[in-house]
Image 1 (cartoon, rainbow, N blue to C red):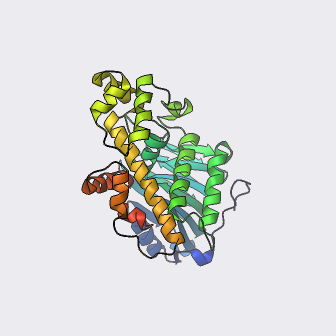
Image 2: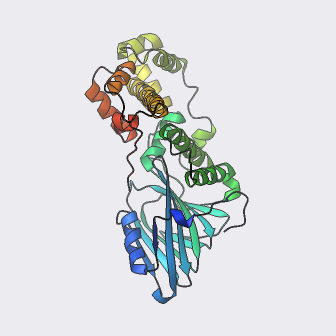
Image 3: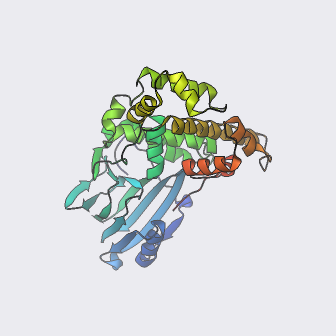
Length: 350
């Protein structure tokens, strides 16, 4: 393992989900794990000793501890579509070279590499290699950026290609990853509890967005667009107080003291959305918090199933009058149905 105080990650062999000495079985496993996008190859199968894969989830974020043992040269080649996840590669022992679009970097213990570009990415290494991969769902990252940091997304989130960073330059992020991994790998993890997992994952997203450069970094450093014109802030304050009530665009225009056109321009310019879309986001956030609280109460009471009607009540309390519309909006926003949140489950995509 690497000599650094920032990472104390170890992989318990008892928690391995896949172990093999067969390079062909490893190739199939990696191909399946990446939904057919990544191909693994080994130069000399006779010098390949073993592969081990340990997996933990923090919400929708996957943490893989991958370990290759042997003296042979190895390579992975992956074709990344535009909506593919972002991956933070942190070598724990050994290192690797990564190449994309004629750019090549060498990553050693004490460093980490964020890969989020589209197209072909190759990684090569020789000898033993232990690697922690933190796999971020791109859509979830953008939601964190837009909602929690108050930044409207006029364009997709784009990190620097092959962003290589020393661990010490992102100490808070690395320390939090270390903490999360060790908790999730323990016998009695706290962060697999749905309400805690959701909060912990949002914090992880925020630390990544703050620690590594991307096309919205300057706006985050300036604190997003929290100030904005007075009429925008008036409407936001009104929505916070009245989101559970029937609210119309005419109501928001009247509260703002500006014209409808000016109000839309202000929200587009300073929030990256419209007044009514902002109202919907606030209502959905209220609903998710309420469902998370209901889940916690149910689990504390050791109730096997949520009571019928809870989703309807939460929808109404959040300002929705149509349960079907609430369910559609909720799933589009959070990637799972209200009932799945209430049951404490999460859709985990491969």
